[in-house]
Length: 115
Image (cartoon, rainbow, N blue to C red; front, side, top):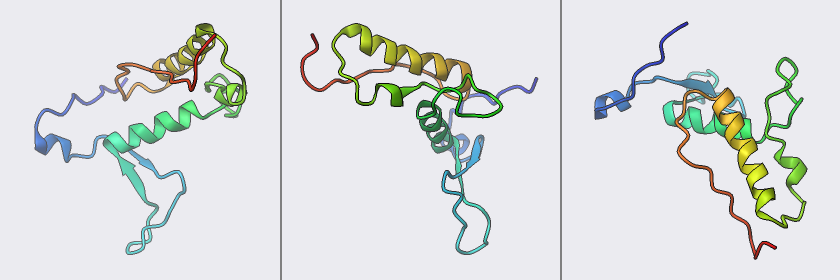
């Protein structure tokens, strides 16, 4: 198993490319014609967004990935249990499928009063 790089500690370390992914739209760079990419923190942010917005069974070779947030999109949140379930889905997916980021907190904001 390959070791993950250590956390950057200096400004020079932050300028190094540690993580790199293609952009979601697979855009083409206007000058060199290569597919554009995101690096480092932007790469992890994009991966987290993709992971959270993925439904379970949506990925062919790994059907367990996904937070199923679309199922709760138009549901009425009536208790703290509902927000706990959404929060737990997000946390479990991040811990299981995105080791590049450090999970600090997940906060679910609800408009209006609960219960």
